[in-house]
Length: 349
Image 1 (cartoon, one colour):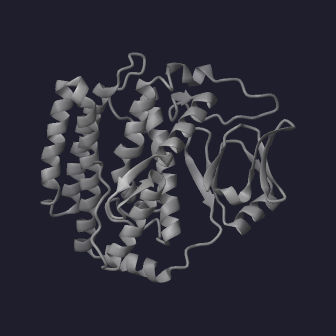
Image 2 (cartoon, helix red, strand yellow):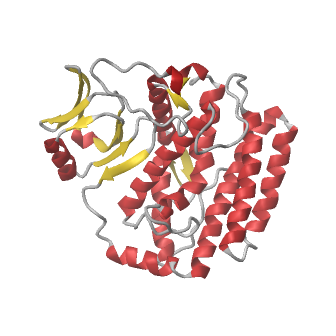
């Protein structure tokens, strides 16, 4: 099954028998059998009828709402996980500071190791001194992870390592008109940061889907502190996959010019909306630079293609698609909570 993205502004999605149809200005632009879809992602001004919502809930098709610029808004979930025993165990085990700290160290170790491997691969050809220094700093930080005796120390190590990683990452970008000086999240101030932020939003959605399938409570994690409305477990499980699925993807599509500077525009250059369609007007300070509609389609296509790539997954000793690897890591976490086997982060080889 697949994920169905609807991003054409002003489009309407409705059901026709057992098919899902996307229509815009009287023209059908997409039609698919419902049994082929496990999730729908609606981005921006997309209309959906009450009967269609009821059908999606009936068929168990997860429906996610994002802004046109990729900001998460919410989701329709057909059924909340029935595995109350797993969720109770999740709260009990993650409420234990020693257990939570040990698990958080695994998340950080996975993230830092994958960041180091990604930079090392790119530096084999570049042999850039800044990147070499970043690789060394990541190795030093990795050696400190398991000696951290509290969360503040661990998060400090992770923060310093990530700063070193992005200093090295900018040297891996070989396109002059796509500069990347440093990571900026709120707001993303350049095209590369826009792609990174969008990618992390899509990755969070992928991870949350896995979390829901296994039956966890997405809000109870350990590395990311608990806060109102923060899906801490989703953010925890994302960490080891950020370099694998997003950072590497952004480097690929930028360096191959799949997405170029022409796919972005500033707020004062806002594209005119289609006839009869009202587009969102985000605050300029929140979105000083935007990805065009065409650029958004390109990025989503590339992200889904990345999820379909296969890699050898050691715990199962089989080649799996990355989307399945994310799900298997969530299942591994469940086994870890039950005391059946230790949690080990997914690492590039």
